[in-house]
Structure formats: structure tokens, C-alpha cells
Length: 402
Image 1 (cartoon, one colour):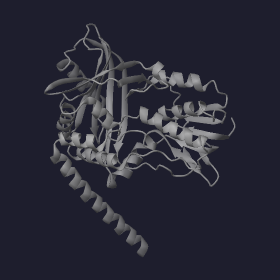
Image 2 (cartoon, rainbow, N blue to C red):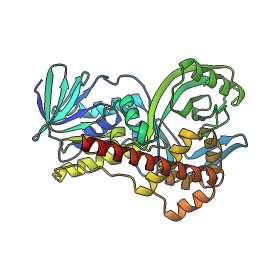
Image 3 (cartoon, rainbow, N blue to C red):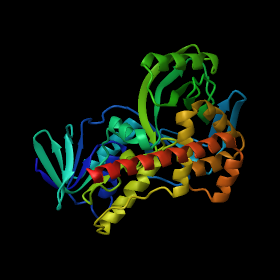
């Protein structure tokens, strides 16, 4: 294998493969590309869900689509039509298979199944280290990040939570599911002072993905996830007889800590590392597709430094307030989400989560929410910001004296 390429993509997950696909469907399709990943992506390790009213490049591999969404809490279930939006699900294995079937048509793309030990650059180019070998490129697109390192960066100055989940695809003997309604949040489970809910995606009347999701700082052991899923199936869905067909487990960081967007003109973070996931929801698929489209366009136009789109300041502010509540007062979040969904049209909520609402929409949403938790979050966040600023100034002055 040669060691110099036009582009190197570090990480062959959703962001890395989406970028390769985008480049190969552009005027850059003949550029040499190396994709490096420890995993060859041969299993159905996850699902991606998103909502859209626009066609995408992946409509033909959508596994299931819903035009109705449900929210549930102790008051019962609330169902809403969301058309012209569609809530869609893509299985990981279908995405990987399709992407590689397209990428493999291009002999200028190579794949290396290996662990990356370092990524760096000089004035002229970037490099990726695998074992004792360095691979060089004009640009390296990096989707690899260390969760522990991110948590340590966020610890003093920012908010940090984990969205972690265990999901089962179950099959029942009887028809137990309303196949045209996807439940995006069901809070009918003990909260334990955290944000805990279930996510139910019916694949048919007798088959569904049932996922237990938690927002917290610490993970559970597997037995605790499984015990809670069994209890939910038994007590809330009245399902006792079922077979577990598939299982998925995931961890997504939820933080307002800034990832290094532009550490070098030659190294460009992508995916979650490039702020491709909404901090307070974890939804990333459509944001990543928009991100890789921006990158491809800028490369085609010979931009020296790639500029990734960032959220508007007011949406960053909203995320910070909610993250503060989730981190320090998680027991309140069930009530907040209940007020959100019971007092606002689902389509407006989805637009808000997509950061596409007007200030007037947002004022209406906030008027429906309990104001005391957000007022406390605003006050405490300001105090934290001031303390961190004073601390940084103190350290800086001590370093200058030294």
C-alpha cells in the first residue's frame, strides 16, 4: 500500500463513510482516499433515526418510516401526526453494506483495517500513524475521539452527560404494537433522580425495537438495563411472551464543551467530533449529511481551511440550560418534557430540535415550560462561568509571575 493520499478519513462509521460517498459523487471523485478503521463494519451494531420531509440519498435503504409519533408519561399516551415530516430508521448493516457497495466501485479508495495511534500535521500536510507506518495526506478528516478525554475537558468548565441505552428487537406471538406509531419518549419508568425513558419503534404488529435510554454521568451494568426493559415490557406494554432477536448498546456524549473545530487547516474533525450531534438529543444522522455536503462543497471550491457550520448562539444557550438541568436536577426533566410535548405541536418541537424555529416559536415553547428550573439553571450557569473565568485569570497571572 502506498503511504500518500489526497485525503485520509480516520474512522469508517457514519461520518467517515458519508464523507467518502459525498466526495465520490462530486467533482473530486478521482482523488485518492484512504479510510482507516479498526472495525470493518460487518454487523448490525446500531440504528440511525431522523425526521425529514426532503428526499435523501438513503431513502431506498430506510428500514421503516412513520408519520405518527407518540409521547407517554403518567398521564397516558399522546399521539400526533407529523406529516409532511417522516420519522425514519436506517439499520446500521444496511447503511454499511450500501456505502461499501458504492465505495468499492472506485479503485482510488483504499481501506485499512487497523488501529490509529496518532494524528498530526506539519506546515504542508497531515499524517496518520498506524503501527510503525505514517500515512500522509493534504487533508485528514478525523471522526475519532476519546470519551474519557472529552469528559476531562468538560469537567471544570462545561456540562457533560452521557446518553446511554440498551435496545432489544423483540418478536411477539400476538400482535402487540401499533405499527404506524413510533414512541419517541415514554417516561413510564422509575426515574432514580435521572432522565430515564423508553423508545419504541414498531417494525410490524408483532415486532419492535424497545430501547431503554438514560441521561446521566455514569453507566449501568448490563443486568440493570435488562431488568428495567423486562419490567417495562411486562407492566407498561403487557407483554410477557417474546423473543429477543437483536440487541444494540450505545453511548453518546451530551456536552456543551467545544470540540476543537479547526486544530489545523490539514485536520478537519467530522461526525460527533465535528459537532455533528445535537448536544441535548444525540440525533446526528441528518446533521452529519449536511456537514459532509458543506465539506465537499468547500473542497470543490479549493478552500484552504474548511469552515464547519456551527449552531446559532441562542440554540447553544438553550442547550446549556437544559444540560445544566439534566446534570444537576435530572429529576425535573420528566416534568419538563411532559410540558413540552403536551403543550406544543409535535412538528414545532421537531423543528425546534432541528434549530429551524423562529424566536417567536421559541418564546411560545418556553412559555409552556416550568420557568423555575430554567431560572435556577440560568443563575447557576452564570455563577459557574464567573468562577471559571476567575480561576483561569488566576492561573494565567500565576504563570506570568513564574
